[in-house]
Length: 523
Image (tube, rainbow, N blue to C red; front, side):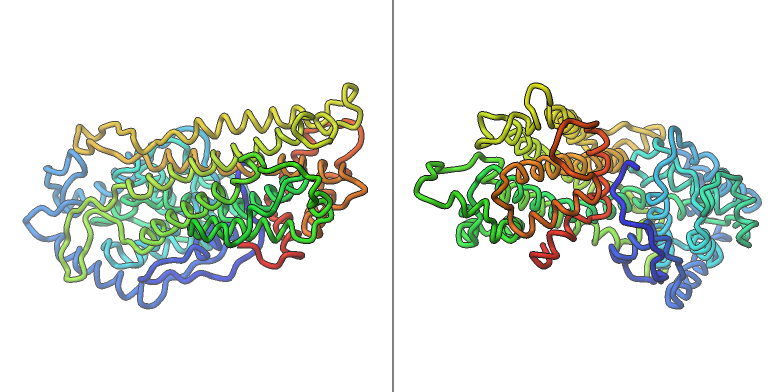
């Protein structure tokens, strides 16, 4: 597994209407195999807009996407008897992806989001075409979509074309049981009739930001959880390193009223509450005036990350409310070309979130390193080893963290500043939003693994403070960790096994649940 996912469960059906889908709708279909149906309002709107397209099909005047070629070939008028072939050729030629298959949840998200645009009635597809997308999603059939092929303008063309190819009964799919097979055979098994595309439909199925948007929604869902986990890990590290929670006082954070910062500080205070370890050095004998930045400034970094994620969520919400196609059928019945398929707004925030992931991970790694350094860990053994010198403890776990943080920094380099002209210079500026989304998925995965290592380290450090005990919330997290990895103290063992098991608690969010069983809901 290379990405954070919730435990498998069958979600309630999702109805796709003329309005926007919610984040919860996308997660339900992408991750939990929710079935999909079109609302009566959506079906009526699809039917109305199709009437507009069919009225133009017989018009002697050329209309882009209806009676012309595409992109740089848009000047060629296509006769009526060649237009079905035009649509088939468009999908076959654009299904040009290469490389490994992308994750099932990504394909399901992008198909759902394309269906949502079809449901607005702004694309001019036939009702049977939209129903076919809903049927494929509900059946659990997943088109094979490749890693490479999208420039993010005109939308995610190649990934969406591979999905449209399947609806036509061509290409390769993975069925609900995980078996790879021919699309036509899979459709037959599910009783789904392949679609014979007609005027305008080919363009309507591929002109959208659905792949990058789906990955943005999934990333926001996971990053929101990971920021709570980062607060839990930071609190346990401050506690275990004999730091102070005074700097997290609410009135101090009111002096700099960023919402995310205040939430992060409140989370850290809640996790550190009633800690005997913290109380043990709340005396005049404690000569430490200030903690290191990686401890003291955690709310500022985690809070800034939170606010950035919420900015990205607002962009995603606007995109979820969009009807992206070219040309579009307007509400007053015109068919107009436009540039709404350009992925720049989504690409920018995808890149911004990769910066956030890298910086939160970087601070986590610094807290881990502080635990392992005898000169800075306030009396704990070197590398938290059972017998330093004979045992190396968690020395190399920090190396692994450092390697991932270095990779995260490389992934934070923006994709959206690049552009390679295509289509004979007709598409002379592209967003690279798909690329931004693909690297963000790697960033989210690595951040979760970095935080898992900090939790393992903090748990061991807290236990080595015995006979002093950590606070109730930290104890609950340590118990959840030990349920997965066993005792975190004692002589060296294969650290990769410990880290792999610890990561499972990130995936199922059990550490957050353990902390919240004491603190109440974290935000």
